[in-house]
Image (cartoon, rainbow, N blue to C red; front, side, top):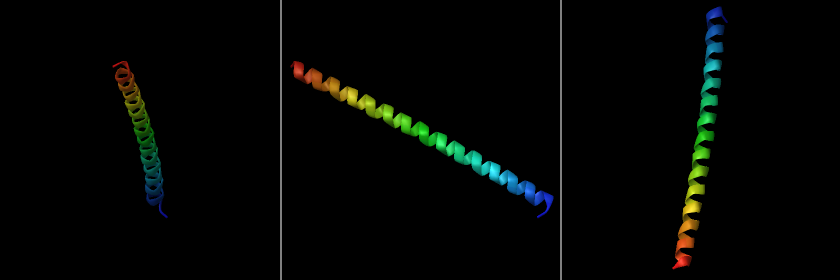
Length: 55
């Protein structure tokens, strides 16, 4: 392999790692958002149940 090929391979490896890191971070953020939405829905359901019970 020439110097240029080695450098290109190194850069590609770096890029791939960065892309994987970004994807992982995005997946984690999506999971967090989903969990928060589920929590909110649960709280709203509980509030609705309480309001229903008061009637």
